[in-house]
Each structure stands twice: as C-alpha cells, then as structure tokens.
Length: 128
Image 1 (cartoon, rainbow, N blue to C red):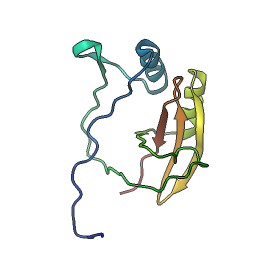
Image 2: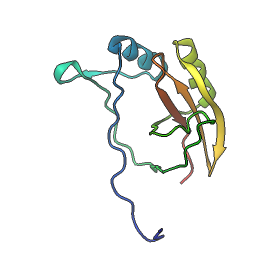
Image 3: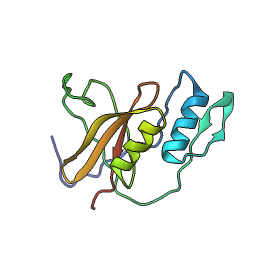
Image 4: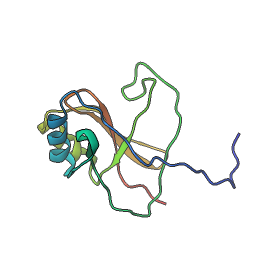
C-alpha cells in the first residue's frame, strides 16, 4: 500500500476552531501562542502564518478510547519550541494538560485542551 517513491500531496492548509465563546478563545490562543487576528466575513477571526519551508507530517492512527488524544476523530498539532513551557502557558490561561510530552518516530509531542475542551496537539520541530 506504500510507494516509497511517491510524493504525498494535499497537506493541511487550514484549520478552524469553532468556539462557543469566540472572544474568550481568541484571548486564550493569543495568550498561549501569541496569535494576532484579522477579521473576516461574518466576524470570523483568521490567524495568518508566514510561509516557511519545513517538513510537514500527517498520518492515520488506530483509535484507543483509553488513551488521551487517540479518540476517534481528528487532531491538529501546532509547532512550538518548548512543549512544557507551552503546556504551562495553556494551564495559566485556563486550559489544561491533556497528554504529557512523549517521543515517537523521531519527534516530540504533547496535547492540551483549551478552556472549551478542544484538544490541541503540540509538536516540537523535527529533524528533516
């Protein structure tokens, strides 16, 4: 099912967090990640990122209802320099740690939950 010479296409190009309290979620993500927003149609708050060439990673895993972050569904991961410092900032801003830092397949990751309970993955830059 794998072709080692094939080039994967269609990387993640956008994500959305649909909040019950948009102002509170904007404040949380600004406090934890330093995000600035641009207003869009119907009050949507967009976060623009600079274009950078870096490796992107995606995958499909097996659900495990007993492991945080492995419930059926989908996750996204934000690139951060320091997993624990980001977890600490999230907790200070009203979120919580969801999955402690771990290593797998050459990268380090963790997960938090924002104040509305949305899981947010954190990933440290990985080697090319």
